[in-house]
Amino acid sequence: MKILKVEHLKKSFGGLQATNDVSFEMQPGELAAIIGPNGAGKSTFFNLLTGYYKADSGRIFFKGQEITNWAPHEIVRLGISRAFQVSNIYPAMTTYENIRQAILTKQKRTLNLFSPAAGMAKKETRELLDISGLSSFADTIAGQLSQGDKKRLELAIALGCRPELLFLDEPTAGMSAEETTQTMELVKRLNRELGLTILFTEHDMSVVFGYAQQLTVLHLGAIIAQGDPGEVRQNATVQKVYLGEEA
Amino acid sequence: MKRSFWLVLVFIVALALPSVIGEFWVHVAIEILILGLFAVSFNMLFGYMGQLSFGHAAYFGVGAYATGLLLLKTPLPLPVCFFISMAAAGLAALVFGYFCVRLTGIYFAILTMAFGQLIYYIIFQWYAFTGGDNGLQGIVPPGWLLNVRHYYYFTLFIVIGALVVMWLISASPFGHTMRAIRDNAERTRFIGINVRRYMLINFVIAGMFAGLAGGLLGPFNRSIAPDLCNWQQSGIPVFMTVIGGPLAFFGPMVGAVIYTLLFALITGFTEYWPLTIGLVIILVVLYLPGGVLGLVQKKWIPLHSKKLTPGPNGGAGEEI
Ligand SMILES: Nc1ncnc2c1ncn2[C@@H]1O[C@H](COP(=O)(O)OP(=O)(O)OP(=O)(O)O)[C@@H](O)[C@H]1O
Ligand SMILES: [Mg+2]
Image 1 (cartoon, rainbow over the protein chains, first blue to last red):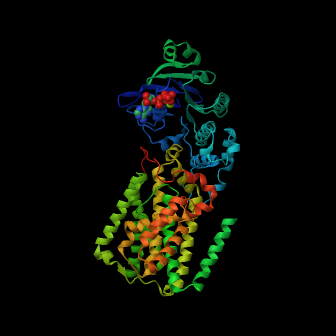
Image 2: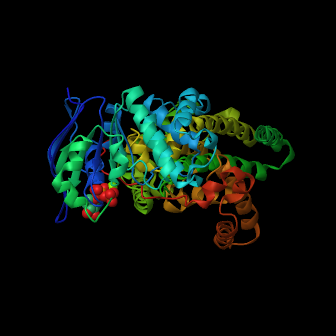
Image 3: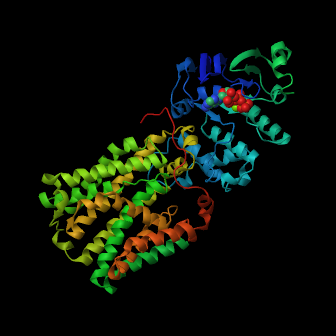
C-alpha cells in the first residue's frame, strides 16, 4: 500500500494558485524530493499535508486512511512529522528540553501531572542529541544556537515524534556546504537504517541529485516533471524553468 | 541545595510567627497565605502558559461563595466545603475556559475579564441565593478554628499542601508542556499536542486552586461580598505576580508578601494606597522586569529577555 497518496490537491491564496491540482504518491521506505524555484509551492504543499492549511479541494491519504484537513496534532499522532523551513523550535528551552518535549509527547506522557519530567526519556533524548550532532549543546538555550544548529534541532524535534513519514522543508537552508553534506548524509542514514519514508524539499537542484530516489518538480503550484534524478535532469521543461534561476 | 534551605527557613519562620506577632499581624499573615495561593494559581496561566487572565477573581469568588453558602446552609464539615469550592470553581473554569482558550494575548485577557464580570454580576444580582450586594454574613468556622492563630495554622497547612501539588504539576511533563505552549504553541501542535485542550485543563486546574483560596476566605473574614469577584480583585494576583516574578514558582507568593504587607502598613496612615501600589508596580516593571525572584534566579535570564506575555499562539483547525 502507498504510505502517502495525494489526489488533485488544490490551494489558492486570493487569486494565486499555490497548489494546483497536485496528485502525488510515495512508497514506504522511499527517499524523495520536491524541487522547484522560490515560490513554486513546496512549503504550501507540506503545509497542506500536515494540517497547517486547509485544502480547497482534493484528498490526502496516509496508509489508506484519509487525513484531509485533519488538525496538525492528529496527523502527527498518526505517524507523520515535519521539520519547518524556518526553524520552529522552543527558543527559551534548552536543546535537551526541546527534544525531550517531542519524545514525551510521543510516549503519551504529557498528561502526567504528578511525576517529575526530569528523569524521563533520558536515554531517548541523549540518543537523538547524539544522532543530530547536538550533544555538546544539550544545555544550551535553543534560541542561542547558530542557524545551522537550529535547523539540526528542528530535524531532531521532528524525529522525536518517531514518525513513519517525515517531511523536511529545506533541511539544509542556511547551512554551510559542510553542514549541508552532514545533514544530507544523516537524512540518507535515517532512510536506509531506520527505514523512514522521507520527503524533502530543496530549491537547489545540485543538493538533491545524490540523495533522492524520486524527484518531483513543482512550478507555479503544479507538477511539471517527475521521475528519477536522471530523467528529471533531461526534461526539457525543467531545464527551461531552472534556466537563469538556479544552477 | 540552596532552595531547600530557604524553604525550610521560611517554613520554620511561618511556624513560629503567630507566637511572636500580635493578632493584627496574624490576620495579615493569613491574608498573605490566601492571596498568595490565589496568585500562584493565577500564575499557572500567566507564567507557565503565557496567557494573562484578567478574570481570575471569578473562580476565587465562586470558591468563596461555595464554602460560604455551604457553611451557612448545611452542616458539612469545612474540608468537604473546600472540595466543593474547588469543584465548583473548576466547573466554572471549564465552562468559561472552553471559550477563553480559543483566544490568546489581549483577546484572551479581555474574554477572561468579560466572563469574570459576568460571574460578578450574577452574584451581585442574585439576592435570593447570594445575598446580592449585601454579601454573606455570619460565616463561622467550626469551633476549633475560631481562634485566629488556629485558623492561621489551618490555612498554612492547606496552602502548603496546595503549593506542593502545584509545584509537582509544574515539574511534571504536563507542566513542561505548558511551558512549551508558552514558548511556541505552533511547534507544540506539530509534535502532536492538542494545544487548546491542554490550555483548558490548565485553566481548570488554576481555577480550582483559586476556588480553594476563595474557600479559605469566608470563614476567615466571617463574611464575603461580591466585590471579591470583580475585575479589581482580578488585578491583585497580576500585581503580586509582577512584583514577585512570574517565571519563578514562588514569585507570586513573594509578591503576595510584599503587596499585602505594604497594604497593611500604608493604609494605616494614608489613603493613597492606589498611588503607592502604582508606584511600586512602575518601579518593578522598569527596574526589575523579572520581579524580585527574577533577581535571584539568574538562570532564567534568557527567559526574561524574551517577551513573556501573549505571543501569536492562535491556530486553526483544532477541536477540544
Ligand atoms: N499564507 C499565505 N498567504 C498568501 N500567499 C501565500 C501564503 N503562503 C504561501 N503563499 C504564496 O504561495 C506561493 C507558494 O509559496 P511557498 O512558500 O509554498 O513556496 P516555496 O516553493 O516553498 O518557496 P521557497 O523556495 O521560497 O520556500 C508563493 O507565491 C507565496 O507567496
Ligand atoms: Mg518553502
